[in-house]
Image (cartoon, rainbow, N blue to C red; front, side, top):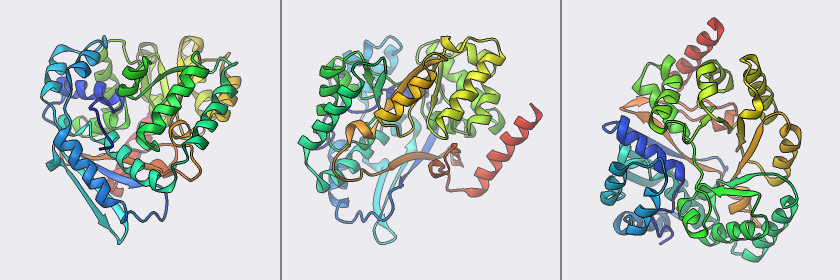
Length: 386
């Protein structure tokens, strides 16, 4: 079985699940898989994918040590840990088929509280089944990771590993983190993967994700959805996990809602689409317009970066604003073939369409084009009035 521990998931999923428990426990959600890599024939892999999902649902549960580890995170509440004692992946909430002759179709639907943890392990399964069929050249990948570690070890670059969803394999993931920890420990500030954070004594790093903002489109007025997502996150975590995600609707709409209250309240924001230089310049200008010193805030760049691109950004902005980086596939799946670009995103909440409208057109995801246009119109009108 590819997924061997309930902790083999992203830290942000556990934090969002707790917020859902406390604020929206009866909300329903639906997710859809998308492969952004063109022309992939998934027919040879679907049997192994389904078999691993079946095993995950049948066999996994939180162990005592897992729960004790999560309970030590200062923002985790006892009632949430008690819920996790009972949690299992329910196979009835996920459907996996082939459509259009060779495309992989994965749909997850059920209570948000009980489906939120599916995304990362399911994507990890798909990625590993595909990747190990294309290459098992671990020596090649480990050599490249060593080169990257040596490339940054004499700099002040700060990097968190965000690559669990699209990793080559559990083994490759562990190897890469071990090399980075051994060679450039001051540069590696943590990992989003809770299992490896525990195993390798690294900081578990997580922020809000797109589905938090998307769900609020169905739970509140669309015009209020982004500000309510920020408000409710702050209500849950009271200053912890203070990095806001900025591209659910797009940068312009985000800055409109990220007023002085939120700009002072949150530690910073995460850039996950669009031009990172335009983003950084815009955010720095936004802080300055409110007489907030940008050096007291942080940008986390996390949009498909490699170490060379991260270092270039760091050199430009290190004296202008706090800078950090979340790097994923470049760490966990840098083998001698092209890794899959795959996502599993929320598409409906309480039966209503929800949209992810990022600043990179290829990252937009909403099966209801009419609803997406409506959301864009609502926020465009608000920004014009502002």
